[in-house]
Length: 176
Image (cartoon, rainbow, N blue to C red; front, side):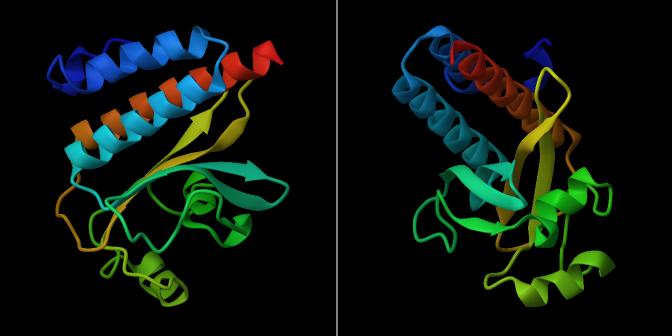
């Protein structure tokens, strides 16, 4: 997959992707974790979102494995939620689209917002699919306020980052 369509400057996402590729071939999980965290931070800033996270689907639960926010986020790395109640699972199962510009106006999410203890304005999520075809979890971005119309570039950024994350997970699993 080529990163050229992502319109990033050489000093931001492209560099972090390269660092992630190097880190995933390294034996140190600490470096892998740091590279993923930096990549999520850049993604959140580029897309102007409030929260970006990587979730893992495990034993009927959604586990937040990595999370980036500017601080004071209502969810934290390590938090666990029932999978079937999650927006992420709904996207993977095709019950929600991968992008919702205004969650207050979208009929499916207007009811779901009543169950969430914080506002969700704009919502993106894409599955993280491993080499064996299984869904590890999702890469999700959200803003507290609606941000507007869908941006294909943002969805492509998210898909590309999800693919890089899947590669990291696959390589880490092959070492164990």
